[in-house]
Image 1 (cartoon, rainbow, N blue to C red):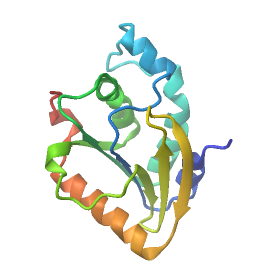
Image 2 (image 1 turned 60 degrees about the vertical axis):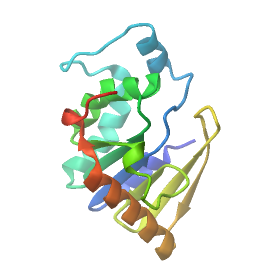
Image 3 (image 1 turned 120 degrees about the horizontal axis):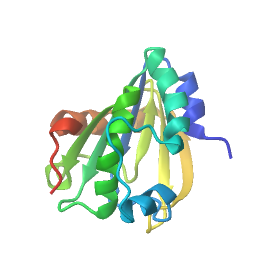
Length: 170
């Protein structure tokens, strides 16, 4: 299956935003398993498994696409969120901006029911997960009311969230 995010990123003209709202993703991810076994990266590391993301995200950012990622997390955080936090320096090295929002500070925000990507404020890709965090399906929409809901949710989260460099895991 072709990566729908890579394709959308290649077509993006000015923005790509990602709203993440789960505390656990892909439990069998080999990188997460290595983290659980004690593997840690330093700021100079650029692991090979991240090169795919670097290629298509970096190309979009180099073209001027602003890429922002906001993560809503429960506190205390899960082991998976600790892993994500640990490797977020890789996202930032490509040029992404990443922020974190404790779930308790998101209680009054109208949020979509699942994670999403939004490109150029005009199309949204919802990602549906199984209970354990594996991707089950994806769905695109350009319906203006839904796109506006996604945009409002993301922007509200973004403005409340803490930049990665300042977010302290609890």
